[in-house]
Image (tube, rainbow, N blue to C red; front, top):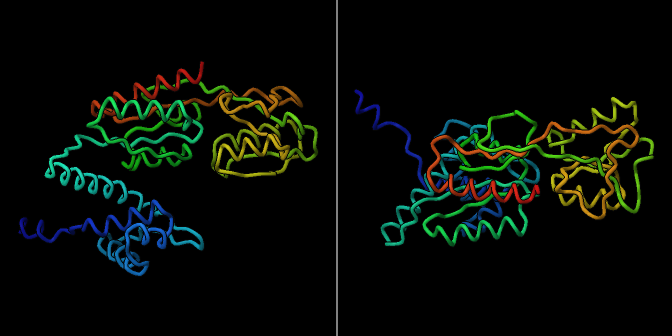
Length: 293
């Protein structure tokens, strides 16, 4: 009876898993089909078949894009690992073994020339390590780490949110445009990340505590979008010191705006991380320290 039960367990086909991963990465069935050299209907059928096997809805299909459900995120973590193992096996049999793959997540504002040069140099020194680098919002990177989709992540978070391998305080500044100030406007225009994005709640709570009227003037999930909107005079914002540039004016204390000291940068990897992950973590943290100097 036990052997029979094992033989009846669901077997997930790699072709179906590859379709799900591609749709999730592209956010679109149409784009995924193009990259898979297939048709949209074929890719849709594969995802539906995978949902039947999993017994869960894996993707939420919106008007413009596609997002994984909670079950989809869980399955994606395993799917990526299975596809990586399949690729590793194929390369090993072909005589071109890749010993390990490291999936790393870095916030957008840390993806600069210095960081990419460091990652490229690491790859040259460790040719047996294949780096898979993702950039995005800290909340999305942390979610990917929690669901097994990333091995190493650098995140910006409220202090003591979660235990990190390394962490350091993230100095924050209120900023306005250098050439076209918004600080004295009423209501006060705010430039923010989307709801649940970093710094947004602190901004709103601070201006409300001062009794100031306010409005959301600009929302963007892109740091460069936030920086540009402030520089062009659309509104004020709250950003890390690293993100303040010559087109901004620091306005800490003006109109009573308080010092915000409850953010930190954290580096996360699992306790059982292999040597490649630990080596890359050390390199990445040294880069973070250099940027903070």
